[in-house]
Image (cartoon, rainbow, N blue to C red; front, side, top):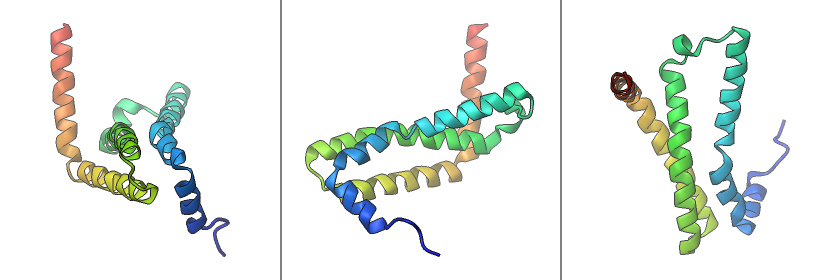
Length: 127
């Protein structure tokens, strides 16, 4: 069984229309919003308790999406205005996401501890 599309055709299309890559970099964070909406619905139903279940995996996913969205959009806009070819932009975008994902996976517990310390300080300052 084969896939109904060709990777080469997708790459050619992206090369013809560089705005597609920029639009993806700008709006892929909507996937995170859909995930948050789905989790909110499950929380309202009572199936999912985010305080107990989010844990390190949920924190890592949110961090990857957020950092990837910020750095991805900025880097792709800059590369487009600098005249870099679209295939190079795509390779930079993919490698950036792989590096962010590897960093978050390796340092997830340390990042979670720093985030928890920040939240604790924030609570004590507000009280």
